[in-house]
Image 1 (cartoon, rainbow, N blue to C red):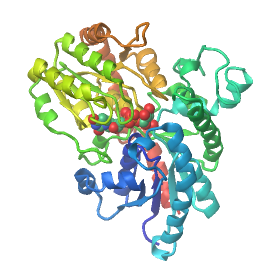
Image 2 (image 1 turned 90 degrees about the vertical axis):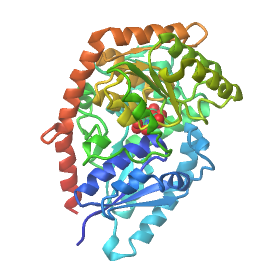
Image 3 (image 1 turned 180 degrees about the vertical axis):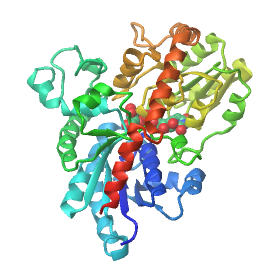
Image 4 (image 1 turned 120 degrees about the horizontal axis):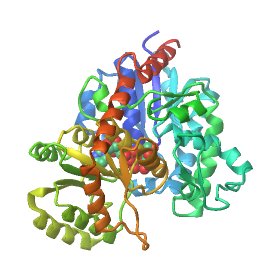
Length: 459
Ligand SMILES: O=c1ccn([C@@H]2O[C@H](COP(=O)(O)OP(=O)(O)O[C@H]3O[C@H](CO)[C@@H](O)[C@H](O)[C@H]3O)[C@@H](O)[C@H]2O)c(=O)[nH]1
């Protein structure tokens, strides 16, 4: 019997592929062979990524592609539509891949690690008699919220479709983040169709997750003690970061990282720079984007802004505006279309991170002791914001005005407040130490990971 062979199946968007790729590399270090399944579109973006090639551990990680039924990256970013299409097309393709791979006796798949948000992959593993594990790239609190759906219905907080019966704030248990029923992950997606699809999938995924005893999560006991207390079967193995591996760059990026910003950062004073990025999906509408830029300008401090041309600069007028803006701020500001984010957050020049609060961005910031300014846009980002501001107290929220806009004054004021109030940086450094201890040898996340490796090798 050769080394175990694990099939890793992420939900095909950037914020899920990066942490699953980190997990794949951690497993490969322990001699486990990996077949990593990408959608055709993502595969094209990833196959030339130099960091990934460099980090390939011998021949242990093999990237393969299958169709996900989506026509474009943009389709993939429409939560409801994407999930529906993925559900129709991907299971059949993954099944074919398993059958093809298992034709060879020496290559048989011994385990499937499926993204928790695609529970069908666990159902497929069960049908094929293959051992299986689920991995959640988001907070354990999101899983706990999902598990609480029957109780939320029973208590009359939501109806059978997930629609809140009234607007209210709920706390699933003490020290869990407060959740606004208007911002439940399934009902801040923009339309009813998306809500129904995502809500239905969460209910189904709750059931599929029971098909394995391994429910891993990219989090740590020290980050979410109450959530893990409520659902002790969730096992944190995070934060999974490039810096936790043998070293090297973060991998799994769909776009080329502009590393010129690292040289620029190294010329700035310690804790002076505001790093601004909204992950891979969120976008600001043109007038809000301009207001953000003017707010950064008013703050009179160095800033590094990630503005992808397909998300932030969609309106033609933004392009022109950005050129004028760049002229005005000169070397005080740096704009890139995709940053090496994990490396950026590790630089001493970064004083705070203005973020949409995707879970990866949240834990990357926390792991580097960087305080956050929170601008959540959709899905779990509101829960993450609540952790940052109310539970860990390592950040501040950016409030919207009566026109639903974050104004330039609000941006300038909150930047000043977070950089000038020393307690935010002190608490962020304290949290960093606790969290990084979890992934060190002997730490709780590390131990969970080793137990998981042992289980895979028992096959
Ligand atoms: O210039 C950039 C911008 C982002 N990143 C990386 O891209 C990832 C972005 O992930 P995340 O912060 O989680 O944001 P999204 O891409 O929006 O992630 C989706 O997936 C997450 C995990 O489930 C959810 O928490 C989010 O709400 C959801 O939008 C992170 O690893 C970043 O380091 C870069 O490397 N360079």
